[in-house]
Image 1 (cartoon, one colour):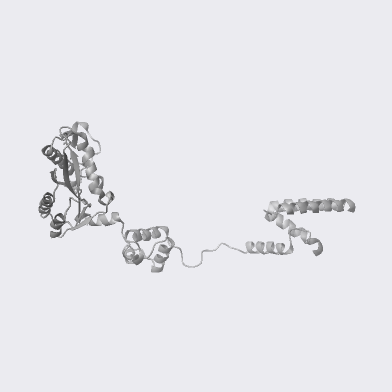
Image 2: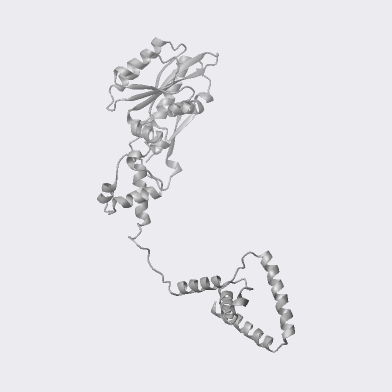
Length: 355
């Protein structure tokens, strides 16, 4: 800025020396032409864009003119005074810190937001103190307000995924699916699945799922579940007419609440619908079923494979029957140690590493 101002000021001094030596007539004509050019530019440009050096030169030359002549300039006295005030303010303005308390660190803010997201029903200032994070309650309130998070009493409840994960140990689902035999005879299969372990049970197969048969399968499943440590609190089923009041009464006697899904809402029973799709894709769609006994044998062998060997993403790639076990990690796999076992006549293969 300083070099630009000196250069422009030097140019204007040379112009003044040249104008002093010229005749008054030429000077008057040039002034009229320049005033007309300025009037044309004013019609095109509402507010000229001036650099700081331009402002300094105009302010210095304006001091040489009388007040009457200043009215012809686009720079008015009020503008000169404002420029001077800006220069003074810039000259005496120093960098200073933000007033008030120091800002909260970004990492602390991230911790507060994470606790607010994962714990919607309780305050967590005390939880922060147990971790050694000292922060005032007003600071927590300011962080939540700045990020659009409501206080815990007014925060929204858990999502369906969080609710199902919390209730998974006492949650089971069931549903019917059908299989058409070679002779076009339709068989109905009643399947149950545990939400927490993904353990599958085939309750029964019949061509005529009447109320008495369905109720008997419910009794059989209830007797099998009686020996388990974790009681089933909820049973999810759809609104199929095959599920009668006597079916629900069997589970209600054991303290299990039957939850009926809405009509045409397969996602409400998504886990059971998914396992039925898996049974079809991996087994039933790849073979022909001769009859009920053949279907019982096929499903019994496949369910054994499903529960004892097939890995599941929701179980960290472990099978349902052994979901708590941890397998040893092998850095360099040797193909010579690989062994294969066939299921369903070679339709499905199971692999393991031998010592």
